[in-house]
Structure formats: structure tokens, C-alpha cells
Image (tube, rainbow, N blue to C red; front, side):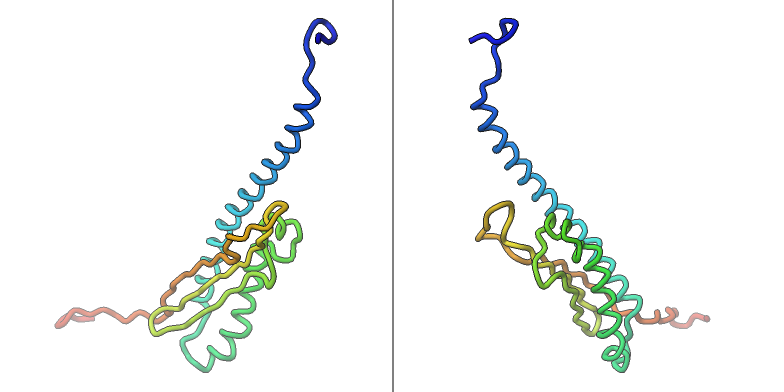
Length: 159
């Protein structure tokens, strides 16, 4: 059936069926892109947390309990949560962040401090629940204890 000027027109059925399919794939692409951005932001945030812990924490047990595990860790966690978009509804939806929010934990050992960033993500991606989805993403960084370097001297040498 020819339209105006002898050209055939677009079938309405094709447009009606293809537009919702296009929108679904567009949302899926945006969610996957959001998760990729979240992984990159997690790497940056975990580096920040580990480096700041390395430079500002103490070896002395007296300060570890009162300052390091208290105000320092809380401030690091608040900065990491802000960077990852916690508290911003648009970014929480894009990154599929779930409660209780991103957490930073530190496990001091003899040589290393193990800094772990754990981000819970929602099982609901797009409009349906994904049962096989792991609901947490974790990044672990190992940072050395901040000791003062020992002066290296060759045996029998001066200085």
C-alpha cells in the first residue's frame, strides 16, 4: 500500500514492538555501564583508604584503639562512602548500592595492614531480581606498616 508520493510507510506494529525492546536494552546497557564505573570507583576508593591508613595510623597499641579504629577509620569510611555515591539516590540507583552501605575494615598484622572495602549491591537489576548475583563486591589492599627505615650500613664501613 503506497503512502503519499508513492512511498510505503513504516509499519506501526514494528515501531510499537521495537521501541520497548530498544528501551529495555538501553536500560540494561546503562546498568552494566554503571557497574563497570562502580568497579573503577571501588579501586580508587580502596587505594585512598589503604594509603591514608598507611600514612596516618599508628603502630603504638595505645593510639590504635583510641584514634586509629575510632575517628580515623570513621573518617576514611565516610569519605569512601561519599565517593562511591552513598547518600545520593541517583548514584545509588545507577550503581545498585544496597544497605548497609560501603564499609571499610582494617586488620592489622605484624607486617601488613589488610584494608578491605566491601560494597553491597542490590539483587534487583533492571526490573527483575537476579538470583545468581553475588550481593557484595570486595576489594582488598595490603599495605605495609609505616616504620621508620633503618639506616643500612655495610659491615666495616663508616657512616
